[in-house]
Length: 217
Image (cartoon, rainbow, N blue to C red; front, side, top):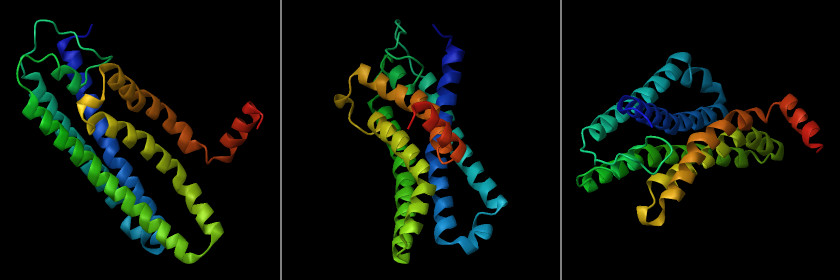
């Protein structure tokens, strides 16, 4: 059981944090592109003021997107039985208990998902494409290994987070059962964030040594 206010707050926080992560992962890819492809200009292109502006734009975009969607969802008429087949308040799950035609709004959610997924994915692919082209052009195997080591953690998080989000929001609903939707939601709301600190810390030699000791590798 959850109160109406609690459900609203849960939806808003989830939508804001999820949207900001989509955009922040693209900003991180751009940061790596500048660091590897234009190292001499890095202090200028990624100076503190620029970083602060990128973070601000990211959070504001996610905030207003969440505000609009949550506010509109809460104005819809819900049926007498307000039981959702989900483990937390998520907009697609709530739309299934709305006593009105939500097809147009669902199209709007799809368009928003495309906006929050495809441009950042394009930016990430473009950044890493440029990085790979630059490193291969150097003809240095050591440089390639160093670059892969630097970017591997970020690429892993991108694959986990964007992969689950794409399945959740871009695939047609006919391809997913309610149980499958819950499994995907668990993946990108719980498992991926839980693994993030571990993934990013694996490049730390002390952490790697501790893992090898635990698993006797």
